[in-house]
Amino acid sequence: MSKAAEGPENGNDRTHSGFVALIGATNAGKSTLLNRLVGAKVSIVTHKVQTTRALVRGIAIHRNAQIVFVDTPGIFRPRRRLDRAMVTTAWGGARDADIIAVIIDAERGIKGDSEAILEGLAGVRQPKVLILNKIDRVKRESLLALADEANKRATFERTFMISALTGSGCDDLLDHLAGSLPEGPWYYPEDQISDLPMRQLAAEITREKLYLRLHQELPYSTHVETEKWEERKNGSVRIEQVIYVERESQKKIVLGRKGAAIRAIGQAAREDLAQILEQPVHLFLFVKVRENWSDDPERYREMGLEFPH
Image (tube, rainbow, N blue to C red; front, side, top):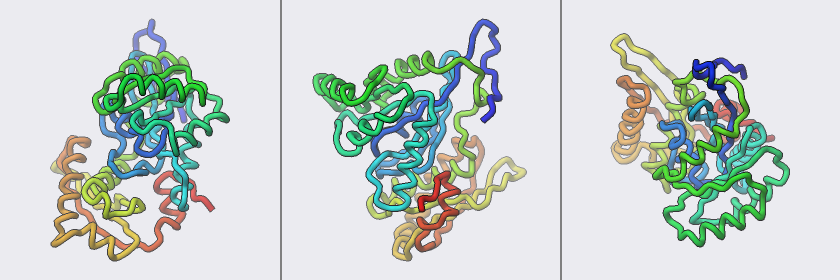
Protein backbone atom coordinates (compact mmCIF):
# COMPACT_ATOMS: atom_id res chain seq x y z
CA MET A 1 0.00 0.00 0.00
CA SER A 2 1.52 3.35 -0.95
CA LYS A 3 1.58 6.27 1.42
CA ALA A 4 -0.22 8.91 -0.56
CA ALA A 5 -1.20 11.65 1.87
CA GLU A 6 1.37 13.82 3.57
CA GLY A 7 -0.79 14.95 6.51
CA PRO A 8 -0.62 18.45 8.04
CA GLU A 9 1.32 21.06 6.12
CA ASN A 10 2.91 22.54 9.22
CA GLY A 11 6.63 22.02 8.70
CA ASN A 12 7.31 21.72 12.45
CA ASP A 13 4.80 18.92 12.93
CA ARG A 14 6.05 15.46 12.14
CA THR A 15 3.30 13.09 11.14
CA HIS A 16 2.77 9.57 12.42
CA SER A 17 0.74 6.77 10.88
CA GLY A 18 0.10 3.08 11.32
CA PHE A 19 -2.35 0.24 11.75
CA VAL A 20 -4.09 -0.78 14.98
CA ALA A 21 -5.90 -4.14 14.98
CA LEU A 22 -8.97 -4.43 17.20
CA ILE A 23 -9.32 -8.04 18.30
CA GLY A 24 -11.66 -9.66 20.77
CA ALA A 25 -14.38 -12.21 21.27
CA THR A 26 -17.68 -11.78 19.45
CA ASN A 27 -19.83 -8.96 20.82
CA ALA A 28 -16.95 -7.48 22.86
CA GLY A 29 -17.87 -4.11 21.31
CA LYS A 30 -15.20 -3.81 18.59
CA SER A 31 -17.48 -2.33 15.92
CA THR A 32 -19.07 0.14 18.38
CA LEU A 33 -15.57 1.22 19.47
CA LEU A 34 -14.37 1.58 15.87
CA ASN A 35 -17.29 3.83 14.98
CA ARG A 36 -16.70 5.86 18.16
CA LEU A 37 -12.97 6.38 17.49
CA VAL A 38 -13.48 7.23 13.81
CA GLY A 39 -16.43 9.51 14.60
CA ALA A 40 -18.63 7.98 11.89
CA LYS A 41 -20.28 4.71 10.99
CA VAL A 42 -17.85 2.44 9.16
CA SER A 43 -18.70 -0.94 10.72
CA ILE A 44 -22.07 -2.56 11.33
CA VAL A 45 -23.29 -3.02 14.89
CA THR A 46 -25.90 -5.60 15.86
CA HIS A 47 -26.74 -7.78 18.85
CA LYS A 48 -26.15 -10.85 16.71
CA VAL A 49 -22.75 -12.47 17.15
CA GLN A 50 -20.15 -12.70 14.37
CA THR A 51 -21.58 -9.91 12.22
CA THR A 52 -18.19 -8.45 11.22
CA ARG A 53 -16.87 -10.89 8.62
CA ALA A 54 -13.96 -9.33 6.79
CA LEU A 55 -11.42 -6.72 7.86
CA VAL A 56 -13.03 -3.28 8.02
CA ARG A 57 -10.61 -0.37 8.12
CA GLY A 58 -11.70 2.86 9.80
CA ILE A 59 -9.42 5.90 9.70
CA ALA A 60 -9.06 8.38 12.57
CA ILE A 61 -6.97 11.56 12.70
CA HIS A 62 -5.73 12.40 16.19
CA ARG A 63 -3.25 15.24 16.65
CA ASN A 64 -0.53 14.58 14.03
CA ALA A 65 -1.28 10.89 13.69
CA GLN A 66 -3.42 8.98 11.22
CA ILE A 67 -4.58 5.83 12.99
CA VAL A 68 -5.91 3.12 10.67
CA PHE A 69 -8.07 0.84 12.79
CA VAL A 70 -8.65 -2.68 11.54
CA ASP A 71 -11.91 -4.08 12.90
CA THR A 72 -11.39 -7.84 12.74
CA PRO A 73 -14.11 -10.49 12.90
CA GLY A 74 -14.76 -11.71 16.43
CA ILE A 75 -12.51 -14.59 17.42
CA PHE A 76 -14.44 -17.68 18.48
CA ARG A 77 -14.26 -21.46 18.22
CA PRO A 78 -15.05 -22.14 14.55
CA ARG A 79 -17.51 -24.84 13.57
CA ARG A 80 -18.27 -24.18 9.90
CA ARG A 81 -16.22 -23.19 6.86
CA LEU A 82 -17.35 -19.55 7.09
CA ASP A 83 -16.38 -19.54 10.79
CA ARG A 84 -12.88 -20.83 9.99
CA ALA A 85 -12.36 -18.18 7.31
CA MET A 86 -13.38 -15.41 9.71
CA VAL A 87 -11.10 -16.54 12.56
CA THR A 88 -8.12 -16.95 10.18
CA THR A 89 -8.78 -13.44 8.84
CA ALA A 90 -8.94 -12.00 12.37
CA TRP A 91 -5.56 -13.41 13.44
CA GLY A 92 -4.05 -12.43 10.06
CA GLY A 93 -5.24 -8.83 10.57
CA ALA A 94 -3.67 -8.78 14.02
CA ARG A 95 -0.28 -10.00 12.83
CA ASP A 96 -0.14 -7.36 10.06
CA ALA A 97 -0.76 -4.42 12.44
CA ASP A 98 1.69 -2.08 14.21
CA ILE A 99 -0.24 -2.29 17.50
CA ILE A 100 -2.77 -4.84 18.72
CA ALA A 101 -5.66 -3.64 20.87
CA VAL A 102 -7.32 -6.52 22.72
CA ILE A 103 -10.90 -5.76 23.74
CA ILE A 104 -12.52 -7.63 26.59
CA ASP A 105 -16.14 -7.23 27.65
CA ALA A 106 -15.68 -6.25 31.31
CA GLU A 107 -19.13 -7.56 32.16
CA ARG A 108 -18.37 -11.00 30.76
CA GLY A 109 -14.78 -11.18 31.99
CA ILE A 110 -12.14 -13.67 30.91
CA LYS A 111 -13.75 -16.90 29.87
CA GLY A 112 -14.34 -18.93 26.74
CA ASP A 113 -13.21 -17.08 23.62
CA SER A 114 -11.51 -14.24 25.56
CA GLU A 115 -9.41 -16.81 27.39
CA ALA A 116 -8.40 -18.42 24.09
CA ILE A 117 -7.43 -15.01 22.66
CA LEU A 118 -5.12 -14.23 25.61
CA GLU A 119 -3.46 -17.64 25.11
CA GLY A 120 -3.13 -17.00 21.36
CA LEU A 121 -1.25 -13.73 21.98
CA ALA A 122 1.81 -15.66 23.16
CA GLY A 123 3.06 -15.98 19.58
CA VAL A 124 2.29 -12.37 18.56
CA ARG A 125 5.31 -10.01 18.70
CA GLN A 126 3.68 -6.58 18.20
CA PRO A 127 3.07 -4.18 21.11
CA LYS A 128 -0.32 -4.83 22.72
CA VAL A 129 -2.75 -2.74 24.74
CA LEU A 130 -5.66 -4.06 26.79
CA ILE A 131 -9.06 -2.40 26.53
CA LEU A 132 -11.72 -3.26 29.10
CA ASN A 133 -15.02 -2.20 27.53
CA LYS A 134 -18.49 -1.64 29.06
CA ILE A 135 -17.00 -0.39 32.35
CA ASP A 136 -20.23 1.46 33.15
CA ARG A 137 -21.80 -1.93 33.94
CA VAL A 138 -19.14 -3.22 36.36
CA LYS A 139 -17.94 -2.23 39.86
CA ARG A 140 -14.47 -0.68 40.13
CA GLU A 141 -13.07 -3.50 42.30
CA SER A 142 -14.10 -6.08 39.70
CA LEU A 143 -12.46 -4.01 36.92
CA LEU A 144 -9.15 -3.82 38.79
CA ALA A 145 -9.19 -7.58 39.44
CA LEU A 146 -10.01 -8.24 35.77
CA ALA A 147 -7.18 -5.97 34.57
CA ASP A 148 -4.76 -7.69 36.92
CA GLU A 149 -5.77 -11.17 35.74
CA ALA A 150 -5.50 -10.25 32.03
CA ASN A 151 -2.06 -8.69 32.52
CA LYS A 152 -0.83 -11.90 34.17
CA ARG A 153 -1.88 -13.91 31.10
CA ALA A 154 -0.39 -11.63 28.41
CA THR A 155 2.06 -8.75 28.16
CA PHE A 156 0.31 -5.39 27.66
CA GLU A 157 1.98 -1.98 27.46
CA ARG A 158 -1.06 -0.21 28.88
CA THR A 159 -4.56 -1.00 30.14
CA PHE A 160 -7.50 1.26 29.24
CA MET A 161 -10.94 1.19 30.86
CA ILE A 162 -13.54 2.56 28.50
CA SER A 163 -17.16 2.63 27.42
CA ALA A 164 -17.39 2.51 23.64
CA LEU A 165 -21.07 3.40 23.97
CA THR A 166 -20.57 6.67 25.90
CA GLY A 167 -17.03 7.49 24.78
CA SER A 168 -15.64 7.45 28.34
CA GLY A 169 -11.87 6.80 28.29
CA CYS A 170 -11.62 6.89 24.49
CA ASP A 171 -9.58 10.13 24.33
CA ASP A 172 -6.86 8.62 26.55
CA LEU A 173 -6.77 5.59 24.28
CA LEU A 174 -6.39 7.79 21.16
CA ASP A 175 -3.64 9.83 22.86
CA HIS A 176 -1.64 6.69 23.57
CA LEU A 177 -2.09 5.16 20.12
CA ALA A 178 -1.24 8.42 18.31
CA GLY A 179 1.95 8.74 20.35
CA SER A 180 2.97 5.11 19.81
CA LEU A 181 2.70 4.86 16.01
CA PRO A 182 5.83 5.19 13.88
CA GLU A 183 6.75 8.50 12.28
CA GLY A 184 5.85 8.78 8.60
CA PRO A 185 3.42 10.24 6.05
CA TRP A 186 -0.27 9.39 6.15
CA TYR A 187 -1.69 6.47 4.20
CA TYR A 188 -4.98 8.10 3.20
CA PRO A 189 -6.36 11.58 2.38
CA GLU A 190 -7.37 13.55 5.48
CA ASP A 191 -11.12 13.40 4.80
CA GLN A 192 -11.27 9.63 4.18
CA ILE A 193 -12.81 7.60 7.02
CA SER A 194 -12.71 4.08 5.55
CA ASP A 195 -11.10 2.08 2.76
CA LEU A 196 -14.23 -0.01 2.31
CA PRO A 197 -15.68 0.53 -1.21
CA MET A 198 -19.06 2.31 -1.05
CA ARG A 199 -20.85 -0.60 -2.76
CA GLN A 200 -19.58 -2.94 -0.04
CA LEU A 201 -20.37 -0.51 2.78
CA ALA A 202 -23.91 -0.12 1.39
CA ALA A 203 -24.32 -3.92 1.44
CA GLU A 204 -23.05 -4.03 5.03
CA ILE A 205 -25.55 -1.35 6.09
CA THR A 206 -28.43 -3.41 4.66
CA ARG A 207 -27.08 -6.55 6.35
CA GLU A 208 -27.07 -4.67 9.67
CA LYS A 209 -30.72 -3.67 9.23
CA LEU A 210 -31.61 -7.28 8.38
CA TYR A 211 -30.13 -8.52 11.64
CA LEU A 212 -31.58 -5.71 13.74
CA ARG A 213 -35.06 -6.37 12.34
CA LEU A 214 -35.05 -10.18 12.31
CA HIS A 215 -32.36 -11.00 14.90
CA GLN A 216 -33.25 -14.48 16.23
CA GLU A 217 -35.16 -15.62 13.16
CA LEU A 218 -32.35 -15.22 10.63
CA PRO A 219 -29.13 -17.28 10.42
CA TYR A 220 -25.99 -15.15 10.31
CA SER A 221 -24.96 -16.78 7.01
CA THR A 222 -27.34 -14.40 5.16
CA HIS A 223 -25.39 -12.39 2.57
CA VAL A 224 -26.05 -9.05 0.81
CA GLU A 225 -24.53 -7.90 -2.50
CA THR A 226 -24.83 -4.51 -4.20
CA GLU A 227 -25.51 -5.36 -7.85
CA LYS A 228 -26.20 -1.92 -9.38
CA TRP A 229 -25.13 1.60 -8.45
CA GLU A 230 -26.37 4.40 -10.68
CA GLU A 231 -25.59 8.06 -10.06
CA ARG A 232 -28.50 10.11 -11.47
CA LYS A 233 -28.46 13.58 -13.03
CA ASN A 234 -30.70 14.99 -10.28
CA GLY A 235 -28.03 14.21 -7.65
CA SER A 236 -29.67 11.07 -6.30
CA VAL A 237 -28.35 7.51 -6.48
CA ARG A 238 -30.23 4.34 -7.41
CA ILE A 239 -28.94 1.21 -5.63
CA GLU A 240 -30.07 -2.35 -6.29
CA GLN A 241 -29.11 -5.06 -3.82
CA VAL A 242 -29.73 -8.79 -3.56
CA ILE A 243 -30.18 -10.51 -0.22
CA TYR A 244 -29.06 -14.13 -0.53
CA VAL A 245 -30.47 -16.77 1.79
CA GLU A 246 -29.92 -20.53 1.77
CA ARG A 247 -33.50 -21.77 2.00
CA GLU A 248 -36.99 -20.82 0.78
CA SER A 249 -38.22 -20.65 4.39
CA GLN A 250 -35.60 -17.93 5.09
CA LYS A 251 -36.79 -15.95 2.09
CA LYS A 252 -40.30 -15.82 3.58
CA ILE A 253 -38.86 -14.50 6.86
CA VAL A 254 -36.93 -11.72 5.09
CA LEU A 255 -39.97 -10.68 3.04
CA GLY A 256 -42.33 -10.79 6.03
CA ARG A 257 -46.11 -10.75 6.01
CA LYS A 258 -47.26 -8.87 2.88
CA GLY A 259 -43.68 -7.62 2.42
CA ALA A 260 -43.67 -5.69 5.72
CA ALA A 261 -40.21 -6.86 6.86
CA ILE A 262 -38.38 -6.11 3.60
CA ARG A 263 -40.01 -2.65 3.42
CA ALA A 264 -38.90 -1.79 6.96
CA ILE A 265 -35.37 -3.08 6.29
CA GLY A 266 -35.17 -1.08 3.06
CA GLN A 267 -36.38 2.12 4.70
CA ALA A 268 -33.90 1.87 7.59
CA ALA A 269 -31.00 1.11 5.22
CA ARG A 270 -32.00 3.94 2.87
CA GLU A 271 -32.04 6.48 5.71
CA ASP A 272 -28.56 5.46 6.89
CA LEU A 273 -27.16 5.48 3.35
CA ALA A 274 -28.62 8.90 2.56
CA GLN A 275 -26.91 10.28 5.66
CA ILE A 276 -23.55 8.65 4.83
CA LEU A 277 -23.64 9.60 1.12
CA GLU A 278 -25.20 13.02 1.74
CA GLN A 279 -27.53 12.55 -1.24
CA PRO A 280 -31.02 11.12 -1.84
CA VAL A 281 -31.01 7.30 -2.15
CA HIS A 282 -33.43 5.07 -4.05
CA LEU A 283 -32.85 1.56 -2.69
CA PHE A 284 -34.33 -1.58 -4.24
CA LEU A 285 -33.98 -4.91 -2.42
CA PHE A 286 -34.45 -8.37 -3.93
CA VAL A 287 -34.35 -11.69 -2.07
CA LYS A 288 -32.92 -14.79 -3.74
CA VAL A 289 -32.35 -18.34 -2.55
CA ARG A 290 -28.84 -19.61 -3.23
CA GLU A 291 -28.37 -22.95 -1.52
CA ASN A 292 -25.04 -23.53 0.22
CA TRP A 293 -23.65 -20.13 -0.79
CA SER A 294 -21.31 -20.44 2.22
CA ASP A 295 -19.46 -23.20 0.30
CA ASP A 296 -18.91 -20.98 -2.77
CA PRO A 297 -15.29 -19.61 -3.06
CA GLU A 298 -16.51 -16.62 -5.13
CA ARG A 299 -18.65 -15.33 -2.23
CA TYR A 300 -15.62 -15.47 0.07
CA ARG A 301 -13.54 -13.40 -2.37
CA GLU A 302 -16.26 -10.76 -2.47
CA MET A 303 -16.21 -10.56 1.35
CA GLY A 304 -12.42 -10.26 1.45
CA LEU A 305 -12.02 -13.69 3.07
CA GLU A 306 -9.74 -16.53 2.10
CA PHE A 307 -11.66 -19.69 1.18
CA PRO A 308 -10.67 -22.46 3.62
CA HIS A 309 -10.28 -25.85 1.94
